[in-house]
Image 1 (cartoon, rainbow, N blue to C red):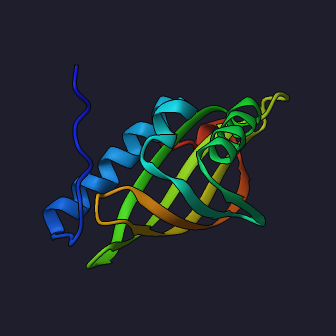
Image 2: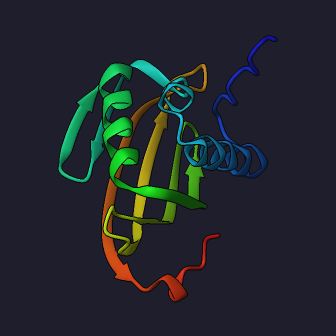
Length: 138
């Protein structure tokens, strides 16, 4: 099976919405290998206070993340776009090994290369403890 080529800039409303949905689907797979394929080999990330470069570092972060953030479930929303950039807001829910649930809120700024792979991702994220009954992303 041939992989689908990335959606490349410049973005339209339709292509930006599709790009966001594809990212949401990939992240909800919780598969670091799959997620990393959306990024350039030398992609740069700021994820909270951690700075990464390249797919291998991205995959390592995602493995750590999903080992800690159990039953992770994410929803992304397009905030804006232009040319080769997209801004999203997001929230995701997860629990730790003690069973405490959290909702994590954040914003991401994405920059893509001409082929549609993300070359830069800047993410700001805050975690809020919630009760199981407060979950909204099921």
